[in-house]
Length: 429
Image 1: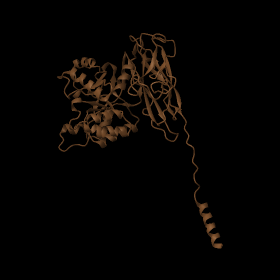
Image 2: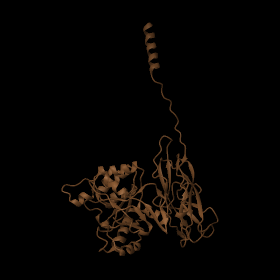
Image 3: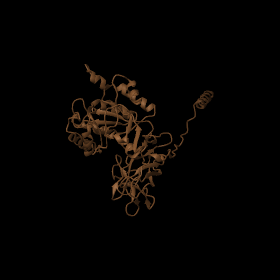
Image 4: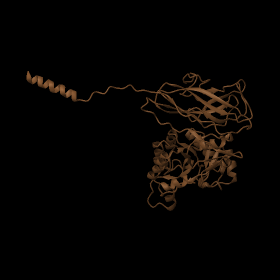
């Protein structure tokens, strides 16, 4: 009997010594809205342009939502044209645009309940909002409002938006996106893809200027045996490139695309603070194996200028790699059909054909060009316009981009074998 009591007492003492079983705490989820984007200074506004025109003016903050939550968004556009927007006969709307979900495509973030879209009160599955007043005249601002709903799967969702005058034309200020971050609970919040856009170009005598450094890379790879001096100069090792990207992330830089640079120069829209355009020429295979995967790792975007006749050749990316990069969020633009000087080549063939091929391969509208070897002449500008390009880059150093030099935007080569110093030199100019 005494032995049994002793065992029972020991068991009781052991139970007392064990830590208490933690009680599960119900996860909480609270939807929030980030900071808004204020209107630009009056000096950045343009008015009286011929026809129907629009200029981004401001917006409410991007929401971070719990699954299934609703949020009201506001985006403002300034009527920068010479014609008014009439709700009855020539109404202005916000329409869906690319790359997500695509022009006139329904969105999972909102709609009118048709074409598989959720019913959030939009005028249509691909029309977010109509102008808020009967008439929006030249120089006036329309504050469009629409409601979005958070999908059930956590992540960062992007909605491309472009204004239009229904049955007339799409307006020329595109590059506006709405980001919706969906979190499972307050403990696990996905990272927003980009910070607030508060960096506006200056406007002096009708010319917009903004500083966007544009480092230019070629080979992101290990040096092959017996590399000549050109290959040595053009090759940045994967280790050095990752150090470059880590430095940019740690110092508040946001990667922007060629389309975004064109948009801020042509339309005056804002970029994130400390923008940088990471560009890659030719389509060498290391750009897929190393650059693309490092960029993805750190949440950065690169603009890859691809020479179409090199795709699939030894040492260059394949079409399957190209498609994976596009699907992974990279920006693909044109570097001609052949890597030849535009001083002597059939410019129209090189520019138009490469744009058509890359647009077919990527499913995107390729509108930006980089001159092979940086060579150009006056005839190149006419060929670029004829082929439908909006901007072109050459290889002169500098970072002050200007709207009166849209076909001569600046980039600077990142020299190989110089570590982080090579990038810092480009950023300092």
